[in-house]
Length: 68
Image 1 (cartoon, rainbow, N blue to C red):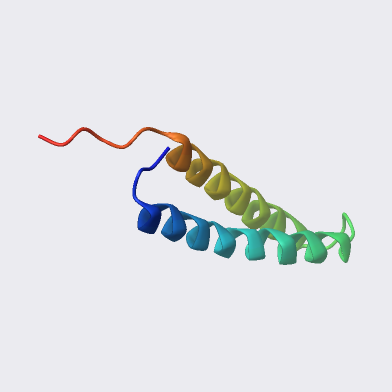
Image 2: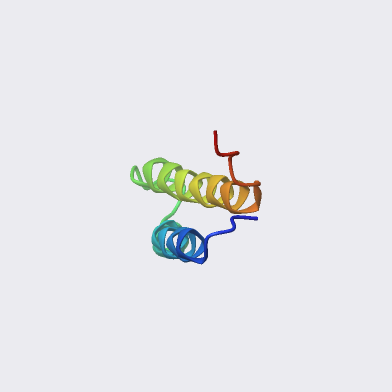
């Protein structure tokens, strides 16, 4: 866990951004059909936002680097 409350708050705030992208892309996917040429692009955006959130969760859970 990150020891600095400021760093943890920063990661929390940064995690909100891809969460918003993921939520809106989910709504766009729901409003498209398989024949909609935009659907693969929106699915790619949705997947990238999900991956970013996973990476941020790993960063938040990792121990802080040792100071020299």
